[in-house]
Each structure stands twice: as structure tokens, then as C-alpha cells.
Image (cartoon, rainbow, N blue to C red):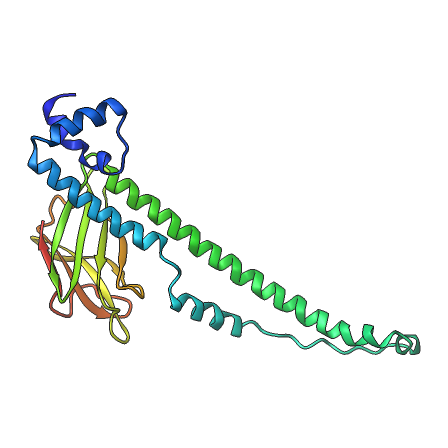
Length: 242
């Protein structure tokens, strides 16, 4: 390991991904390197934010969404049919339970579809968490801190080698009404959209972005109409130079 190489291990050290001999050597290095020590502290702060977002309980809005989806399940009424006299000799409870069983079967099918949909959402969240961890642990991962605004803090962790980054925020209020937050990469030719997001019930954001930041001069966040905008329609609430 050459001397320049050791400075690239901050991300791997922060997530405990170094071999034992590398870890011991790197710990000796950071005693003398303030820049690496500071970067590790920033990685730890980022990992704490990411971990809180990944392990927090589902927001109340998810419960509302499930209940709303249940309400849309059509409860079909059993279709009546002509029966012979022998049917009337069936036990009274058989005639009573048959319609209830039909309705229950329909409800079970509806709930199965809802559960499958929720499992798909959970799988998506787990995949996103894995991508975030990969970016943070990348050898070339860098952190871009955004100035704090009204108690809200944000940062972007980016890996040029992976061509991916993650926008993390704390204390960000939900976008008002029919609005949404939009992230922008700003270069010489102006801003280009980098994705839409909103804060959860605790004001946290974990938003994965892709692209090349080599030509990006600044990163900004605006509040836009639902669905986003091809160009900003409002002044940025957060902006940081790259």
C-alpha cells in the first residue's frame, strides 16, 4: 500500500470493512492525518443518519395507504342460484355459512394482493439501503455538506467510481400541499433534474442519485409542483458548491 492509497480507505474504515492488518495500519495513520480523521467523523455521522432511516418503524402514512387500498377491494355479493328441494333439507348452519365463506375468500384474495404489494415495497427499500451502504463504503466516496437551513441539515455522499450518490437529510419538513422536493445538479449549462423526494414523518430523507458529478458545479434543492419540473420554478432552499 502506497502512501497516497491509504487516504482512500476512510470509507471502508468507517463501515469496518478493512482487514485486520489494514485497520491497524490505518489507525496509526489517522493519528497523524487530521483530514482523514475529519472525513471518518463525517462518514460516521452519515452512517448514523442512514441507519436511523433504515431501521425506523413504517410511517403512519403507510398504515393509511394500506387501509385505503383495502377499501378499494370489491366485496362481491354471492350469486344466487336455483336449487332443488333437497337443498332446503341442508342443515341451517350450512346455508348460513356458505355466503360468509364466499365473502371471506374474496377478502383473503384482496388481502393477499395487498400483502404482495407491501412486500414488493419492502424489497425495494432493502435494495436501496444496500446501494447506500455500497456508496458509503466505496474507496473514493466523498461527502458534500449542505448549509443547515431552519434546523434542517443535508449532505450528499458520492462515489465517482460507482457513478452513484445518496442524498441524506434530517429535520426536513414534508413538502407543502401538492408539492414535492426536487434535487438539481447545476453545471455550466444550467440545472438538470436529479430526482424527486419527500421527507418521512420524522423529517428524514434517503434519496439515491445516479450520474457523473465531474461537470457539476453545485447541487441544489427546490420545492416544485407534484411530478417535478424540467427546470426550477422556485429559488433553492438548499444549495452547496461541489
